[in-house]
Length: 234
Image (cartoon, rainbow, N blue to C red):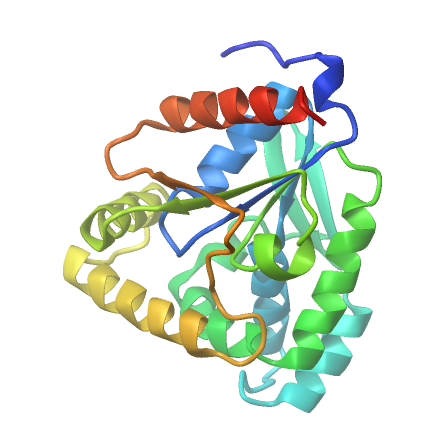
């Protein structure tokens, strides 16, 4: 793997990466953060953590009042352990628990509540205050970090996105089918784009990268090239 960049032009910057589910945001952002020596801020994982807590405590995804109170009190942390990005919820490692189909199916409904989003955005901005952050999620460029130093919008064909999700679940030994993932992604896109609170949207100043035929390394190399060009002019 390439060594982290230590160029001064990268110091104190925030790179925000947005896009639909399965577009490559998470994998690309993790590697990009590693290459730059940045913090990896997975905003989607935070909503998944809230969703996991709700499901385990019999809180309905539609109960915005209860979920808002929960979101204000949960302790969500990101840690790097043995080069693996871990997510902790109230002190417990939930890295894999937040990726189950049950959480995936409910997270859009949970994250649609304005109170939940307000609580999470407040925490995300606090983490990003000092810069040196790669922030990834479906409203990072439009809502969380509208003044980010570089905004990237990753996209891919729905068939490729479904194929990637199938591989992700296979790695976790979770049974699913390509047809099921196609349906789920279509449903998620409609929910994420149509919700009133922080809908999925592509900002005018975001640079669009179609990842359908790109490897992760190619995606990261392209973003680093864009970042070097952009930051050297600031």
